[in-house]
Amino acid sequence: MGTDFCSVPACVNIIATEHTWIEGKAIQQLETTARLPGMVRVAGMPDLHPGRGYPVGAAFFSRSRFYPALVGNDIGCGMALWRTGLTAGKLSADKLEKRLGSIDMPLAEDELPQDAPAHFRYALGTIGGGNHFAELQQLDEVYQPEWLEQRQLSTKELLLLVHSGSRGLGQAILEQHVRAFGHQGLEEETPAAQNYLLQHQQALAFAELNRRLIAQRMLARWRGEGSCLLDVNHNLVSRCEIDGVTGWLHRKGATPADGGPVMIPGSRGDYSYLVQPVPAADSLYSLAHGAGRKWMRGECRDRLSSRYNVQQLTRTRFGSRVVCQDKQLIFQEAPEAYKPIDSIIEALQQAGLIVLIARLTPVLTYKVRGEEA
DNA sequence: ATGTGC
Image (tube, rainbow, N blue to C red; front, side, top):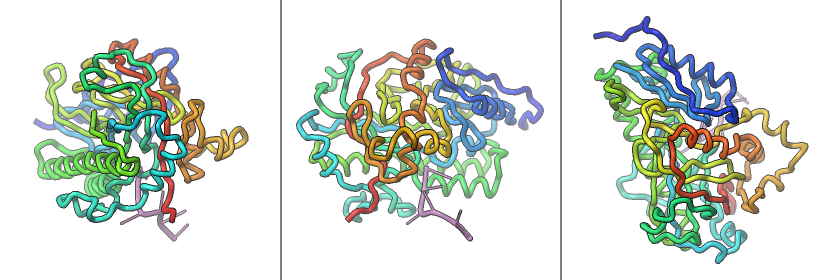
């Protein structure tokens, strides 16, 4: 049985309310993906925004073939939440920032697991650029106290959220794939498909290891004792059955809603939410992965430089601080460049897709410090 | 997104 190249466009579902900011270009991109051969249905999350050709904040379900380009370059990117053993207020923000120093240089050989991958090994334990970050957070509002009680977790214990991915590895995998096959996707069960899926699996493992090493590296600097509460990928493709149809579910900036609790962070100057997903086929078992960009990276500096200087952008409305030595990046990642997280959470709640567990505020955000002495 | 292009 071949692929239906002349099939009707896939069913498009967008999770949003009248308060959700979604750019027309992102919708257009979503509709473009709906016309890809074999595509059955696509779902836009409330954080939907334009990407390079394909939108970010969306899930795509296809039959018989899948599309590595929809997953993108950062295969395995995701959010890990760690407890830290650190008590809020015990160490000043100054002290936390000083003790942390820079975590941008490669880990020493003896800080890496023996079986860590050789390729792109130097990137393990580093956060990368773009929207990636590691953030100390404090529980601010608890909606499901049982969740904390079951883990003997106090609201005073700081939590660490790590958002990073497979660094250069995922990029190399996608580049190699696009060079050989372009954007037409891969027919399932072919050698090329098996080969991609194997590499994709390696990128997922790399990204998970990377987040673990970042968390452990930070905890060591703070002398904290931590453990992982959750680690969830939002860029991946997986084989699954939806409403009786077996196919391929691509997630691009879409957090899985068919497992345990997940984090949906706002911008670095906004709340983050810990939520329990409610699985639903209509949304392709997916949720927003964050606030979603409102402004393109290129326009942020022009829009904000008259209002704020770089120093001001290192502090947020919560009094938290942002370590970001990259002058362009700090404008690109300013809270104003993102949608308000409450508009995203509201849309997911209204669609019955989440139950809130807790709300967190940022304490210290690490983006990039550079290779200081 | 990316040991960041010419």
